[in-house]
Image 1: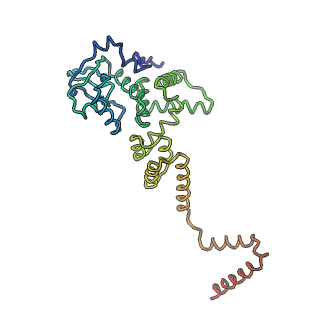
Image 2: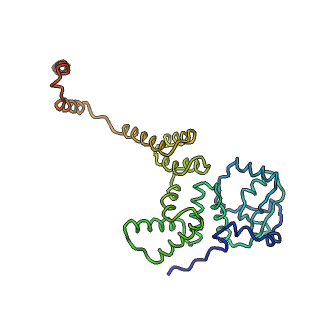
Image 3: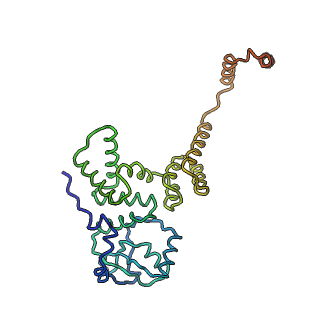
Length: 310
């Protein structure tokens, strides 16, 4: 029997509600601390921070201050681990602030990671790769399975559905957990995540980097990622970004590239084979009914006869 999983922490269905405590409680728990005492989470799902947006945030903080405190949890050495608010922390560091407002939450490692992941997933500017990795990480800690097992679970469900096969009860329960978590995230169903997002993690590094920087939609990146030739792939990536190509335009260019590549791979027939093909084509043609073409053929035949009798 599959052991019962630990439920999500309170407020996990609405992280903003969990992070925004009632005013009286917030005032009592809110305080400031030295910025050097706030340590970023090693499990932060966001790896790319848009410099322009970070600069805008820094400008806003400079004018209005940090309006929403950072959410942290206490560490044994007296420092605090950041749970939510890394963009605010980075902007404050850029401004050279010495202190930041914080709200302290007593969270376990598991709870802190769940809140960090969900808080980031509810942000609009999380890029597709970071979002996919964050969802996968959230599923692993919620179901106590590793990432390969999660991927296998989703593929197994799809396989069973396509073949109209039944699944074991424990697998059905795990899939229900997955569906519930994805519903809370508000982005995917298990099938849409399996079909549309997991393949992104198999893309080549050059395509992944473009996605991490938010320069191209993931549907376009997936299409370009299927190009095996690195030089051609890079060239189309750059063109798609520079010209803002639509997905249909990208697909047309890929078809053209594939056709050209295929033609390069196909060897030309031998001279003898070309001669045989031409003769067969002449026999089936209507050249015999055209006096002008017939005369040209007679001259060519005479030249060929002279060539082979030399």
